[in-house]
Structures are given as C-alpha cells and as structure tokens.
Image (cartoon, rainbow, N blue to C red; front, side, top):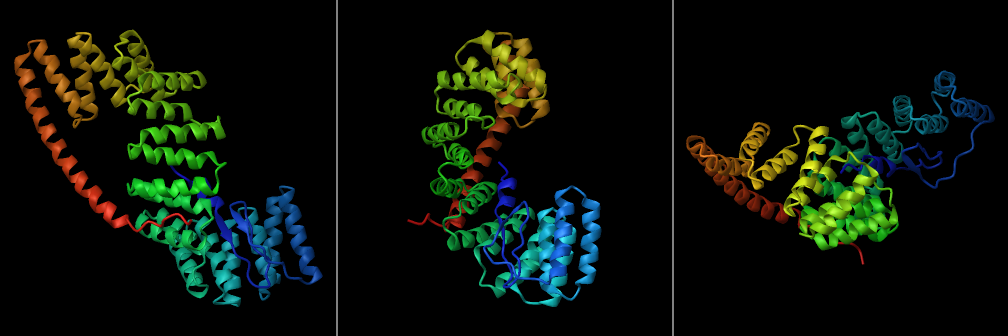
Length: 406
C-alpha cells in the first residue's frame, strides 16, 4: 500500500510574512494575506497567470523568465512568481526563484520551507532536506516541516527517521488525518503492525468519511490476525465507497483467513463479477473450492488464474494439491516440481512432492524429496524462531508510538 498521492496532497506551504503564500496542485495554501505590489508587477504576474490558464505554457515561461530578470532584486515579486510556477508544476523554475528569494532574504523559515518543498518535488532530496531542516531550526519545527522531512526520509528508505518526524508532526497537529495515515504506512514499511493499526485507526477517527483510511486499517489488522475486526473495517470502507478497487477481494481474503469459506467464496465471486480476470480472486476462489472438495470448480478457477499468470506460485501449488487430492499423482508431481523451480524454498510443495512420489512408488526420488523437505522444515523452524525474536525487538523499538489524543 503506497500513499504517494495522499503524501503529496498533504504538503502544506507557509507564506512568508508580508508575502503571498505559495500554492501548487500538491499543496495547501496558508492563510496569509498577499502583499500589495507595484501596478506594473501586478500586470506582469497577471499576464503569466493568463498564459498558464490558456495553456500557452511556452509563452508563460518566457514571460516568467523576463519577470524574474526584471525583478531580480525584489523578493516580494519573486515570491509571487515562484507561487505561480509552483501552481503550474514548474518545479525546477519555482525552486530556482525560491532560491533567489532566499539569497535576498536569508534565514527566513517560510522561504526555506517553500524552497525545500520545491526541491522535494524536483527529487533533489539532499538539498530539500537541508532547506527544510534549516527552516525547522528557525521556526521551532512546525508540523508541516516535520511532515516534509518525513517524506524525504521515506523517499530515501530511511523509515526510522521518517517515523520520528511523523511523530513530531502528529504531536503538533493531532487533528491532521493524513499525517497519521502516512505514519501508518511508515510503520507498515518496518513491519510494526500494532503501530500501523493505531495510526490508521486514528486517521479513521479524524476523517470517518474517508474510505481509504479504513482500507489501510483493515490491511494492518489482517497482519495482526485481528480478522473479525478486519472484516468489519473493510465492510465499512465498502459502505463509504463501493467503488474501491479490490474491496470485495479483501473482504473475501479476510473471511478465508478467518476460516469462513462460504462467505469468502461469496466475496471472491462478487469481485469476479466486477472483474472476471481479477487474478487473486481467481486464486482465492480456487483455494476455497479445493478446501471444500469442489474439485471441478477449483480446477476452473485455478486454470483461469494460470492463464493470466502461468508462474503464479500459489495457483500452481493449489493445482498440484488438487491433483494430489484426486489421486492424479503424475500431474501433481509435475506441478510441484514446477513450483519448486519457481520457489526452491516452498516447503509444502516439497512435502507433497515427497508424498506424491511415494504413492507413485518412485522410492528413490521420494527419499530425495523427503530429505530436501526435512532441510526446508528445519530452516522454516529456524526462520520462524528468528522472526519471533525480531518481532519482539521491533515491538520494543517502536513501543513509543504516539497514543491518539483524547
């Protein structure tokens, strides 16, 4: 689950004292009154704005370059020009103009903040982080700056520092749902599902009409094995927005993991009614049918899934299981070997390969498969033990997650 669009939508931009607040399609304007400019400057900005609005981009940029040159010493005019450029996603030019304003008015937290945001959109992450960090030092680290620093850390894969910055952001803006949503995503990235669920749940409390918050909360709850609650949360998401992609599949998946196969099959069928080629719903419906010994249905669903993705590991494994359960051992052996070619560490395929070979009286091959399975099973136990230790350590590391405000 990536919240990239949500992240960008949350980038607020501050207005420099006495300057026009900068806004762009990805940003929320600050409520700062615009300063008055000389009439000739207003005319120049109006011309640039008109050209952009009429899709005369080349003409707008030519006029913007001329305006920047003519007003090279006027920070107020340049700030407004940068705002226009940012609005129309001219991030490179906006960053250059913000940089010029910063040269004219150094150590302004608002200018540095806007410069950092523009550089972020240009993917100049090191420079963006430096500008935002300086802005934070000068302006007591407001919530928006923490949030922007968190996004840069996340872009770098530094989820630990991203979480630290997001915690600061949520402390300073406890009613900002998007900060909690991105915090939930960052906790998800490090596998701390308790923290992810708490953050997403807080987002649902702040914005109870936003279906995507419930969608992400449901995903975290599945990882926590809180399946009854996950089902309720997914169903709430569907009530809020029935057009959410894959929502019926997700409800079906939660029901399947909860052992409610009839309901799981029902929701997989609903998803397939909307999208007959939905791969994971085809596999899920096949799994349910195998579990219910509806082998003809299972074969139909799994073959449709494999027609879409011949190397889908689970679909192949389930088909092999189907052949094994219906005593077609030669076919099962072929499929389990194919799965192991795709995933040599697929322990269950190695086990059923051993059983199928044994029942086909291929004793030497069966003994070889049994030995391979024992090695994989021992490795699985070791990995599971390490995962428990890692989960314990991770829980201890992230226990300081912010509690939702009362």
